[in-house]
Length: 284
Ligand SMILES: N[C@@H](CCC[C@H](N)C(=O)O)C(=O)O
Image 1: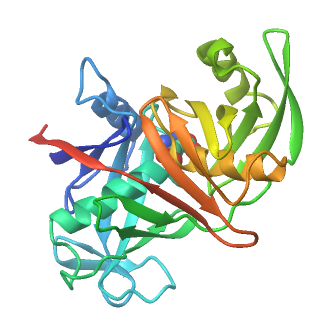
Image 2 (image 1 turned 30 degrees about the horizontal axis):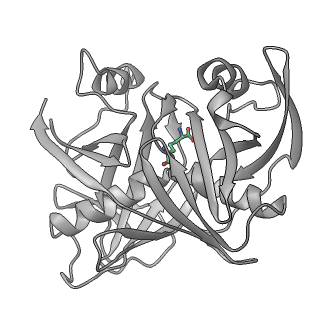
Image 3 (image 1 turned 135 degrees about the vertical axis):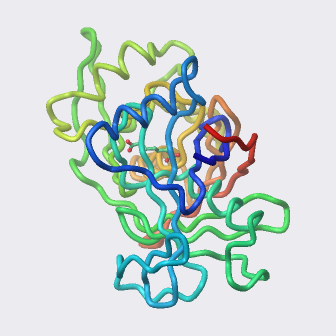
């Protein structure tokens, strides 16, 4: 199986080349877990599967159309992206992977028009649109944020928290703290991910506004644990900070692996800008 390894600020992915058959039959989760294993596999936070779509909204596998997967009109810049967490579960969306996929499409020349700078990525949560910027970064239109439980109370290890819940296609609970250096990310994250208010589990973000327009955030991801960055989590953090009057239209979100710039105007989509890099290619 041919793959390439990608990173978005240290949130890293195994990307399977189009046409590589991922056998979705029994034992599939175990295969994802093995690919992501940092000692016995390639090592990653997740596995990304990219499939080009033809002009009729069909997936193209080995040159053979596999039937319509989307009602959207595909125009040669349409791709389907699926993302699997390191524990084998499938997530509906992943922000850092969307930037990696955009760079992947560019470097492999997969878009029909080589000058195309904006792609349509069809995900389980809908359409997202990454655009290649001249400075090498990628700006992704991540769509509209959504509240799913509002502001809720959570408890871990006898500590009480208030969390703002935001869906970016996948669920996030953002907890603002006074001192991010004092959080017990692994202890609290692992408990809160499976809180009974989250039947589908949840990504947990701890955040502190450290200066005007600057938010330090650390994340415990559903299905992965602590990661160095989370794109959807950064978008959810900005939206939660806006909702609670902590920031304005845009902010830098400073993660363990680097910084993402997030912008969200009222009733508009969330825009996420940041880098993405290919690390290596291989065959497993
Ligand atoms: N790291 C990702 C999010 C990946 C999926 C997440 N763990 C989930 O289960 O929802 C990002 O950059 O957004």
